[in-house]
Image (cartoon, rainbow, N blue to C red; front, side):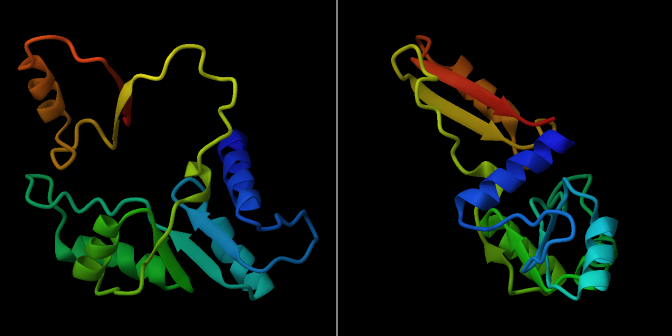
Length: 168
C-alpha cells in the first residue's frame, strides 16, 4: 500500500501541493478508494480540515443483471457525504452518475494525482506503436471488453497495435 500512497503523494507534488509530514500543518485531507476512509474521517475530526473524497467509480451496474438498487446507492451516498466537504471524480460519466443516483450535482471532474503522466524519458527503446488502452473491470458488462476482442477478430490482418488491459 505504501507504493500506492507514494504515487498519490508524488502526483500532488507535481500539481504544486505540499505533503505534510507527521505533526506538520496541512490544508486539506484527500481520500479515495485506495486509502482508508476511517483514517481520513478521524483526521478531519481531529484537525478540522476539509475532506475531499475522490470517487473513481460508482458501481451502479446500470442496465445489467447486477444493477444496484437506488437504496443501495443512496446508502453509499449517505456514508460518503456525511463527512465529505467536496467530491471529485475522474470522468464526466461518473459525475453524471453521482448526480443521477445520489442527487449530487457538485462533483468536480479532475485527473486523480496518481494518474498524471510519469516521466518516461528514455523508457521507450523501440519506435512508438499505435496504442489501445482499456481501463476498468474486465468482467463488467458496462465496460464491454468482449466487444474489443470480437472487433479485433474481424480484421483481415493483425493491426500495428499494442493493447494494454488494465483492470481486474
